[in-house]
Image 1 (cartoon, rainbow, N blue to C red):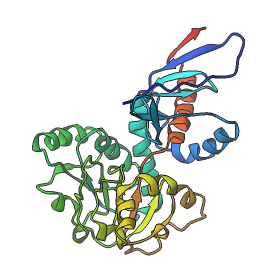
Image 2 (image 1 turned 180 degrees about the horizontal axis):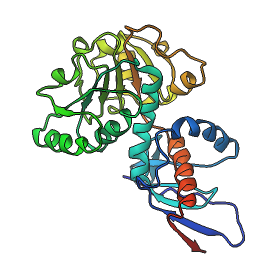
Image 3 (image 1 turned 135 degrees about the vertical axis):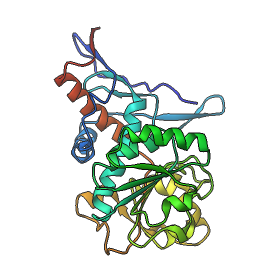
Length: 305
């Protein structure tokens, strides 16, 4: 159950509310995340408060999570905007930044496992950071993958093909984006070639996994949030519970790689897994940048309060 996010801003005179609808015309572009990294630090220093209440448990108890809520509120500017598109694009943009730092420069084939909104946004943004010559897509529902291929073709500068199986999509792929709601592995270790990068966006509960644990075990693992991964990422948590690895198997966070504090890819043949759960601060930073672009383009409505 989603709940409203309520934050009490400091009292101000002549306050105004800016309501912005995020759209491709307003979206600040793939560059946002590395720009937003500095803003995130600044936002916390200025005590920007963002509460993200995802699920209600029992009658009066709410569980606070790092996942997204329906609306993103940035009270520096008292802005209200639809969070669906924000979350859809910032998730793929984070993956694209991860690919920029972790994927091989000569990655030629992108495999997309899944056919939902995240699959489409990943095709749109991953093609900005690597010159793929082919995109292969697979989903367990034939109608869904056919529809996805048709829609993705309009977003991609390279051909998009439907694969007959997940294995056919993954074999020899340089970047593999797993964007599913599956609770069990959809990508097997034996399918993944040396030097590949695997982006895992699904399996965001500790009782689910979308990667073969043998694949995770032999890969260098980078996460968006170490604390989040150790609490929520089933692909990580279950392997620890089963004694396959411990917490030190996480080599670092993406932010640490961007800042040069942790090595990303260490050898050409190394398989690198980027496990993405999403963080509320990414929504806050993205909301700030969308608002900046919206104001520059005179988008949205300003309402006297």
